[in-house]
Length: 84
Image 1 (cartoon, one colour):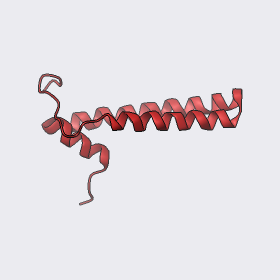
Image 2 (cartoon, one colour):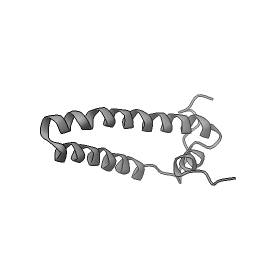
Image 3 (cartoon, helix red, strand yellow):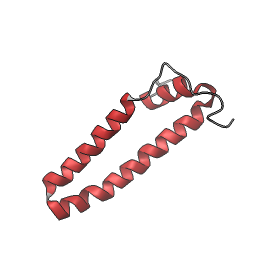
Image 4 (spheres, helix red, strand yellow):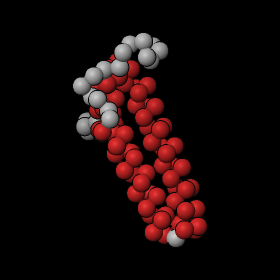
């Protein structure tokens, strides 16, 4: 059995028994932001050039990394925050 990827590990640690729901939310958020970036980068590149287009993609990656740094895997979600 392969080891779970970091997103699933974080969801299991933070959400406990609600890990499948948390994993689904995290995965959906990543896919939506990736879709938004895939649309935005060519538009920016067409308007301001490829340097700005690649820069906007880098900005998305930096924002994602900063958000991940904010995840506290040493604390679980309070039971009242996620409906069972």
